[in-house]
Amino acid sequence: MTNQLDNEIRTYELHRSELLGNSKGKFALVKDDKIVGIFEDKLDAIRQGYERFGNVPFLVKQILEVETPQNFTSNLLAI
Image (cartoon, rainbow, N blue to C red):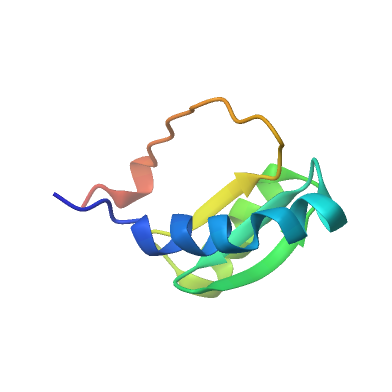
């Protein structure tokens, strides 16, 4: 079974060292194979994701050296 965000996670990992150098602690908005934007605030990144892409999967990830697993489920995906 593949994760819906495999492509976005792969894109983040490819750019991770660059992001750590430039934007450590901020939030990356990733869609498909593009880093769409970097945001100071997680909610700003999520809001921008919904505005740009609608109610589809996209990744918002804090740029950190050491990562702690977190899960997030949106009730907007329920139809």
